[in-house]
Image 1: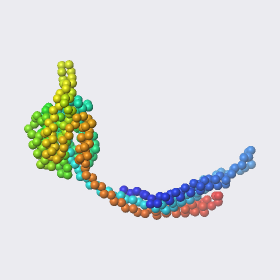
Image 2 (image 1 turned 90 degrees about the vertical axis):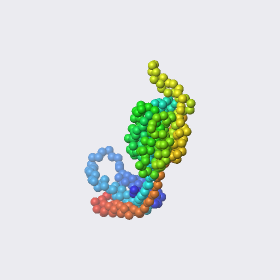
Image 3 (image 1 turned 90 degrees about the horizontal axis):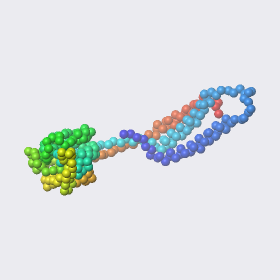
Image 4 (image 1 turned 180 degrees about the vertical axis):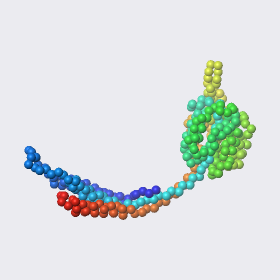
Length: 330
């Protein structure tokens, strides 16, 4: 990328001298065309003003331009070319999200699932350099979006998630194993799974710790998040009179989630409200920053010659006009 810089910009203060010069020219021009008041113009043969009358100001304009360009040349204009080499160490991330019916609990605003989706989308928008995918699970698991750098598509798919898409339950092992399967062939320097759930594993053919061993084998780091307040949480229940809220006990297998994280070199977090959930994702974001190395190179070339040539050109144009068609103009 090329740009013009001036090595000695202080010389531009010399242009302040043009102010009195322009004022002097304006006063001189006014004095050279003084007027008198008469009662009538009869008896005067007023001659029409020709193009030379208007061109006379070009002489002064050319001189001013010559001075400006000369000062610019003295200020040493330099072209600067900057080159930048960027090395990015990408991170591949699979987000494994629990969408079981218990995620409708209202201990988060508006509920656990919507809160988890909103915070995850914010996390995605800040990871421009990384490939991110999405796996969802409840009683079973499937891939909602494979690894992609098209984060707009991923965010749209995130927004389409809702409870009841698949059989209800909590198959943590399946959700983790599916995420591992999506990352095992990745060539990224760092491979990460963020698994979020609000319950206890109660379904699925694959045990959670077996899935964790697979993640460890493939060098995949797993961050686990237990979402839910302490004690009980209001949960919508369908009754004969419509939907009513009932306080249900919050049961999260924190010991299991902690083991999964520990086995794979990750961390376990407990989110008890919206703000805590946001803080957890911010911490993961800091822990898993892409490695970006930027090396800058620059070269500078003196560019005063074009300014000098233009100054000389305007000076020659002034001399040529003054000694030709504007010879008799005062």
